[in-house]
Length: 338
Image (tube, rainbow, N blue to C red; front, side, top):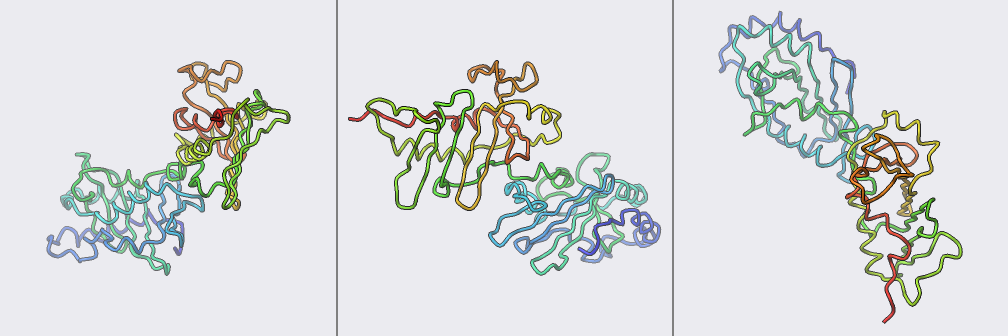
């Protein structure tokens, strides 16, 4: 990537200089590279740079040695990235705009252009595509390849959808939505603290070659009478962490400013030994539109979501069905001795 500053306005100059070629050429005159939008060897893609002219917004997707993608250095939503790769693989020309529309199309590209640069593992540019808006019939997307003066309307093979929408995303749209992206076998320790019910808090530890061990957080908390920890319950519990998925990132929500004055409903800490994730959990009252600890009731439809602060940084919204199973209590892991 030689320069992140985008020469979008130069497209208008290209329009003036390339108009003669466009108007005089037939479809058989188009150079092969001008028609070749698809990247068939998409498995070789290692970096994708996307930027918009209107607001200068941009992001970089990179594929690591482990095969997983990141967005601006943060774990990316692998499903969304795969969708982008599939789109790049299946790009095809829908039609060539009529010659009388040429200047309008070029103005559209200049004013609404999104630039997509694609690179391989050696840093070589595989393709650079400019995307504009949609034609008047709302089918397809105006597009042109770098180095060309020939615009087309393109789409993804077998669809009439807007190609631009696949790439017109924010970093938050592209981030990994899973708070705890670990398998149960990777988890070494989990701590769940309930500031308003200290006796319910617990710690689960997993050591190589040993059974899972659970202990209370509050000193003096008794083990349920006549019971013993159940390994199946402990193992099933760890499985639920990988299912906790974010509904949305809300880092700019003013609710963030109120959190320092609120004691969380729960504090959850997970460690893999090498990495750790800590979240503070706050019940969100939809009827009141705010955090509501005093009125919190898990059974109430008003409390369908939680606001979670992750690693004292990101603020996210999580739906109750996706996270409630990690809010177990210390006695829940015990069964009566036979």
